[in-house]
Image 1 (spheres, rainbow, N blue to C red):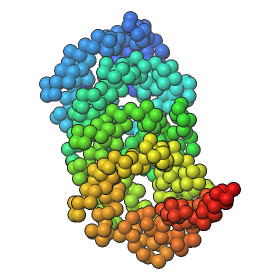
Image 2: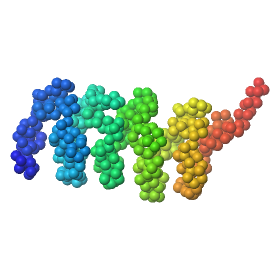
Image 3: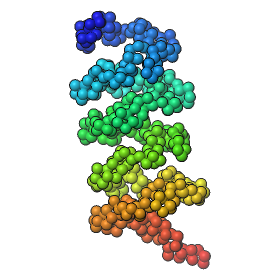
Image 4: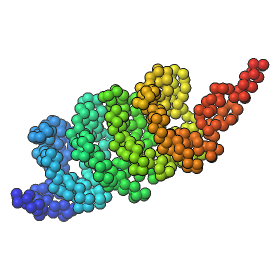
Length: 468
């Protein structure tokens, strides 16, 4: 028996699916999966199992018994087999290699699961919605979405989860535990899967490809979210405002706007954020870290997403069009801002003066005018500003940097808003109108000046009202 372990020989094959085993007892246990025979029931949660050994392993979840400890980091496990797999993280021993992409794994089970990415094999289907999965364990977790069964509860905040694995990942938010380190940049992660996705930023690996447009992605979840762009499918709706989203993650992030929940705090300035991703991007303001560089002009950015938005300046790519006026934009967020120009929607109001704004960040910046707070200072002349974006525009006065060029006459500008305003001289576009006299302007500031000075029609209307 021991010799078969060393040679990898598996003489026992399943007649149903062809899976091979080293021992006859393992094959018999496997046969029960096809037969649906599960004789062993957990007395706590009534879950059924094909063998007594699997039931015993499961019961340790309820008793929290983890008798096997890692000698290196002290992490505990339910079974010795899980400990053995874990220990390979420390030794970096990865004996199992994928023949397609050559990625290596610490166990054959992880390799088999990975290989299904290449074959697109998803043998397990949800009986409710038809969604397919690589493994039965993923299917079981998914099915709890339909039943709303969330038996795993966080003892710190009370949040419930469909699986113990999700609970364990969540608990690291409270403990700050990040045991997985990137060997390239040293960045730490709470889960191995997040580390693996991150490492692809360094290697450039994007194994998930969209069959419609051919775009590649770092992980399957990004691909799934992207595919909904083609189908226009938005299954997740906010119960407060009705806004719909492509994926549950976006909905959860949005819902925090209504609840005001911000669990992630910056240790430097105390600013709070609704998700860890926003906190990480913010922390780079304090460290000055900008690891992502534009290949054209060399400008550096705190995140890869900001770099991608910037590169559209050079390519001129504007895939998002306004259905009202046809104006095109490089990002969907810019289009959303523009669309509110037509609708006049300004949902955020200042409690001091009542002025309304398109976005909460504009309101926050405005409120600093009342409080006198100007936390951002120019390192050259010391001038202070209410927001980081204003200081960035100001600093270009000292550097002389003008990265934005007019596509018609070539004139250069320090900010994108200024080049857009300039281009309206060529196009004749004047999107801002006076509600009293109807006069149009190329930018909102010109309209505001017109209104403050008092347009002729407004003055005439005041005279008529006085005479009456």
